[in-house]
Length: 347
Image (cartoon, rainbow, N blue to C red; front, side, top):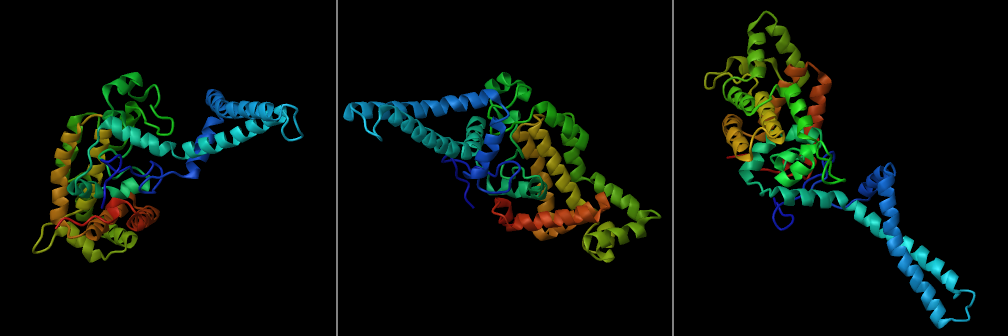
């Protein structure tokens, strides 16, 4: 697995896409052109650029015709040569700018990586992030960086001040960077995290008994336990006996409850806290490492981990559609070129 781009670090998929690694595509040019048509200033800048290419060729055609064919001919009339040069210049300009637009998102991501000073991931760090790969793949985020999407939390102070942490827009037209305010509002809504302390509590819960596991244990021991077991078994395609083992443990292992689901959720929430600017990279990796170590000690393979993560999804959502979507998502992830798809499981 190679992490090489800008001689140092790999570019990833575009957020919203699954192609890895990123490359120039005609569809990117079409998207940028459609956005430009909604912006009169952008259209004006493009017209000036095309004119800057076409006008010199038109003038050259005029001067050549005037110099070598001073009396003019049907095809060497200075005016006709001028118009022909303009059309040729416009054609060249359209092609050049289309190629440039097709490469704009890749250039923007490269510029982002350069400005953040991001270091390549170690294999261990990528393995930690792979525990959250299903979530990343589901909404086409980044899984080969601590941030699952571009964020002002990673950018230098000069860009943060200039753009007011995203309130004044993104530094790159073809790489939207949401404001920290937007990220923080979504983080609080989804995880009830509004500070670094909240993120640390989430990590501590994952190392003890997480919220999904607590709820699972309570329902399993209550009067509706049997009905819940039957329902979750049907949704996830496992045997009720397997769920009983999760709830009660075995002779050689304690009850795991829904550990995989709590681990997946906690890694996603802690990364979200980093993207929102509540945690530094060092603090984030410090919180993630023991959670990941517990996962790697408990499960013997990626398949075993994701099997129980699916059970957690079945319990959390009570939805066959949600389980099927996650199962399909994992199948697509394994067939993709994402590094998370081919990582060795920690031995």
